Amino acid sequence: MHFEEIKQKIDSIRSNSQYFRVSATHPLELYIGKNEKGFLTLRFNGDFTPVKVLGTAVIEIKQVKAKEYNSILFSLVSNDNTSLFYHFCEDIITQTEAYEGQDGYTEIVNRFSQWKKMFSGDSKILSESEVLGLIGELLFLQRHSFSIYGITKGLNGWSGPEPTHKDFSYEHEWFEIKSINTHKSSVSISSLEQLDSDIDGHLIIYTFEKMSPSFSGITLNSLVADIAKMLQYETDRDIFLSKLKQAGYSYNDIYDNYVYNFIKVNSYLVDREFPRIKASDLPKGIVKVEYEILLSWIEKNKED
Image (cartoon, rainbow, N blue to C red; front, side):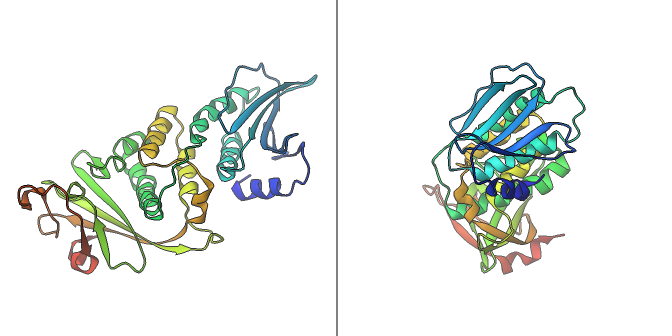
C-alpha cells in the first residue's frame, strides 16, 4: 500500500475508531484508520510482549492488551505533518511485506525509533529559495552520491548545510549544487568558498519549473521521506537528520505547497578557465563577495 492509497483510505473514514486492514496478504496484521479521538492511527495486532515505547510531541503511543492479541497504536495528535505520517505508514507497511518472523512487533518498534526524529515539530520555515536549493542537494545525494559512493560515504560527503564548505566532497572531487527556475539565465554564487579551490571541481545546476500544488511533481517533504526510506541503518539516518537540521529543515506540511517539475541537470567543470572569483583575487580587507555567472558564458565547460 502506497502513500496515495493510504491517504485515500484514511480520508474516506467518517467516524472514530474505524480501521482498514492494509492487506489480507500482508504477513502482519496492520491497520490504518482513526482512533477513538479521531487521530490518524497505524495499528498493529499481534502476539507479543510489550516493551516501553516513547512517543513524541506529535506521535502518541498506546499499547492495549486483549484476550486474543496485543495492540500497539501510533497516533498523530496534531493536524500538522499528516503527509509525514502517511509516509511513515507506507514505510512500515512496505518494510514488513516480506517479514517471515513470528511477529513483527520488534521490527515495527525499531523502525519507529528511526522515524521519530522526523516528528520534531520545529517551527522554523525555510524560504522558497532555500526549499529549492535543498531539493537540488537532495536529488544529487539520492541520484548521484548514493549510487557512486554508497549511502554512508555519500552522506558523510554532504556538507552543504555547512556554509564554509563545498556542498559535496569525496576524496579528490568536489561538487557545488545550484537550483534555478526555468527562466533564469544566470546562477548565483553566494560566497567565495563555493567555487574557490586549487583542485578542479564541478558545478551542478538543476533546473526546475514551479507547478501548482495539485501537480504530481517533486516536493521537499516527499524527497526527504523517499531518502529516509532508503536508510536501513540508524547511524545513517542520524547523519541524514542531523544535516537536515543544520540546513534548517524539519518536516512541515507547508512544504507540500512548493511543487516542482524537474526539467534538466547540467554539470560544468570548474577549472582554471572557469569564470569565478577566488580569495586570492580580492584586495585586502574584502572578505565577502556575492556574484552571478551567465550560463551562456560557461557553456564551453559543460560536461557529459
